[in-house]
Length: 100
Image (cartoon, rainbow, N blue to C red; front, top):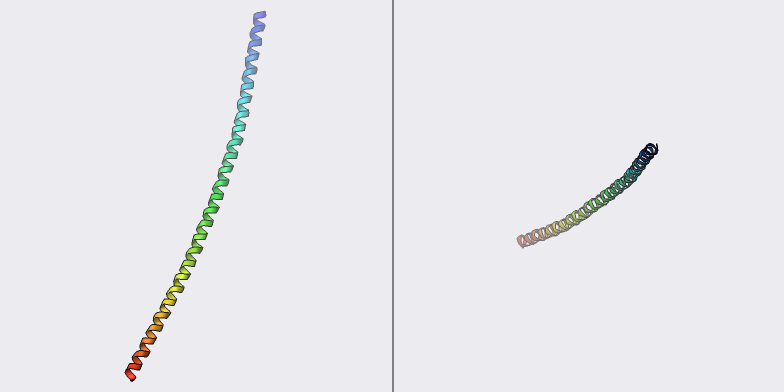
């Protein structure tokens, strides 16, 4: 009888141990799930921040390119003006030479 009680007690102890292990495993899964979820959220946040910073960089590059283009156009206009002025002066000189 004591053997049977001992075996029953042992089997109950094993079942309780297995149940505790299972609960512990589930608890760890939940904790890991939460930490994984937090990690994913953190990664997504970093990606979005990184994406925003890339968008800002692209926008800044566009703006600086536009500014450079504007200055180049202005510079070329001034060049054209001076070339036109020189041409006009040369034409005036030619007229003067012809008239004299």
